[in-house]
Image (cartoon, rainbow, N blue to C red; front, side, top):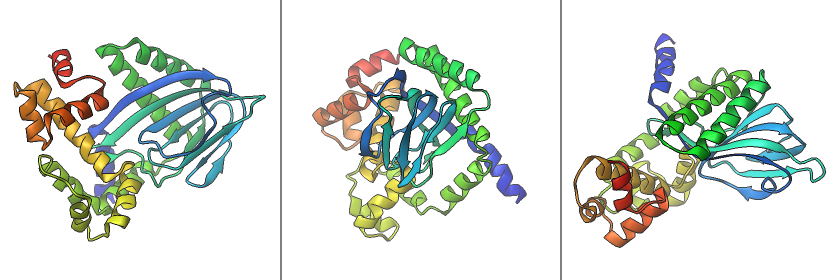
Length: 275
């Protein structure tokens, strides 16, 4: 038991977060949506209004002064009252501990009454401003705001077993060998059948199993890891862009198009910005 608790205590040391969008919005527009399964997590603070969400088939009715975390890959539907729509702060983000998503796609909605709603609203307002302000130090401060609110949501909601559940999930998952294989063979063609064979699953079962744990499909994950490696090579080596594409097993034109779609910048512009 002591070893398990010690391991759990060290988990945040390898936690990384990345914010892809943050906003404060009032009104009916932008909330109502049919079922989707986004590839990013959502953090919300509800300031006013009435409505509901359905996550993995379970219905909830978030109230003013509540926070909630909607994990990536979960099936989500949302509805708000047209005569009393939600006023909400929200943030789209990725969060991982090492290779593992912080929140799995088969989990529930993490929802709580904020013990200090004025503090949360102030921190969320700061996060939104920092995100739109841009700049390297703004990114660091925005990440600090996000981590503070995630901790508040989990603590205020009484999710005391969160890290214990996370540890059990990652330790018992069969995907460790798959992730290791992907990491060691990024430069090679990657087929679903090959990855499924590692865990002795039919591809039709492997794809939803992978997405359930990781929040994205296997090939989406492979692309993301290749782009992470490309960013590292562009920032810290002088390798030609064509050589980097070759190292990742891609034709130059396809690599450039994929990289721009992932980062918003062509490889050459990304290299110039990070040096």
